[in-house]
Length: 478
Image (cartoon, rainbow, N blue to C red; front, side, top):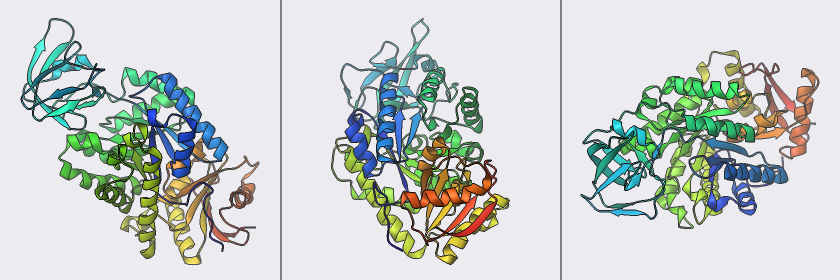
């Protein structure tokens, strides 16, 4: 068989999520990001206006259509994130300095009503812990909002819109806020593919958002962001109901000791893999590339270790939203992924013990498809799929051949842009089940992913229902 490569970039299994922002708002840069390896564009709703969010999505869709690329779009809800409001200029502080946080204070707050829940001695961490303060006093001004006096524990600079973490302060506020409701309605109208929910603490938080999406007529997948201590305690329940997960290591790293973050990263990735849920490893992966054209060796190792851990995707935040080298950051991440994947492939992707113990018929067939592909030397595993569930079920076993997911649903195609090892293709709707295999055969050939005479394994669920994988077939493309 002749070696084939994707038209946009050399094929890799690990997907790349890149956050768009001021540095990547123009069409030429978005195209460069896609060509460099961006699979999913993230729009952080904590920043920018609805008009800017709409413009970003329109740009991504236009570029993807022109390049014939499957690019997903993820809208990230702000959630109950306490943030410093707009500052006239950055605030520099020294150890022992006191500043106030409140509606009318040195540091304005976006949720001033929460300040009455603060207590003296509690920690307040700004910008993922870069600036640490403690509550010296809570002043009730007689109005509806309190003002908190904070004493700096280290020197630093506080900038506009930086996040505020409260590891010692329980807040009585749901993960899905009134502000999120407005954002949700807007991004569903825009037609995003994923909605990321911030500060998930329980399965009920995820179920509430999924219910609202359904009530509003949407079919978006929900990405549960794991960044609260409470989420770790309820991890299995959250994994069971979420469509995908994100390990948001910035906030998580101030909720728990930093030394525990790598441990939980591996646990979350494994839990997501067992459940066939895509999982994203995020935050400060190539942070130095915000201002430098090359990453540090430690950052390269961080990305590599996430891939060795078997993450489905790695994410860039400030590196691509406000950084000076956004395209280089995506290209660097893609290069690291290809090198690490080649190293893993030398010995084969390790099969986890749980893999052979899957009880459901669809799980057993997905596993058998991977085993059959290995034994017969198939060039690809082709998964005709309506919902994407078949492709994600196959991906959990980390087969060496490319997984080609063929679907008649545009939303499924863009949602599978996040799935490990999956190349999604759009095909026309077929009139009956007997036409699924021939149609998928033609789609693979037309895309140039394999040639006539190549041997593939096809596995599918022919009833368009998630979890109904019921077919496996060794097939010669023709």
